[in-house]
Image (cartoon, rainbow, N blue to C red; front, side):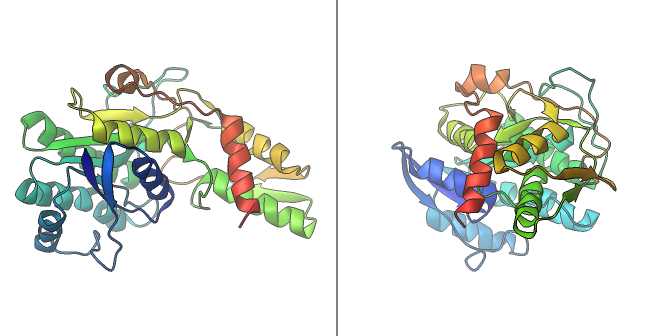
Length: 298
């Protein structure tokens, strides 16, 4: 039976991770400290170690991170938090499994039409990918050396109910909703020609549970994707169709710096399948339908 300490439970991914963990009978308790209890970004390592000793978890899951910001902000949220968690866990509860969320942005450009494996050389093209790669590498080194039972999940493009406007489909849903309310003939988004691997956040949450509960891990990095790639344009058009929006979808400007140099990405998820028995079960149409329905109920 497993006791889990989960950071970031109020966020998009963290909320779904909490629900998945709490619904599994093998998990006895999920403790979710808010920022008032301990702020991972600004809190002191000694205070974190004290919290870990008090809770005495079997596993620690970190869903705290940043998608945007300056290089310093991204490194603080995605690299330094990883280092702080790793050091505090080794000091306070060295037997606990430590799980962090990385990003497909760690890979950078990959060959077209090829599914990227965890062994692909990581060559990120911006501060976001670099900040996550550093955190992943710290965890990988600690896990391989036996210093800590640490693992990173390289998350591709998470989608699903409750997603925010920081992500493309969350932003598109908000603009479509506004256009429908105002009778606007078009919405504007950034370029949509790139191929992306959209993974349902509930499938990602199931992978987090599988990693937490696995008796042992042979690898320290796992891809968390759907194993499918479509253009962002196709995904937005499917969302518009689901919403009943027939206006123009205009593409202008540039995309997010973290991904605009990557024209193609698709996860090879066979490692998680073979080692953990996990594979994604939701198709894109279901995810998009649920994104729209969740917005309707707010």
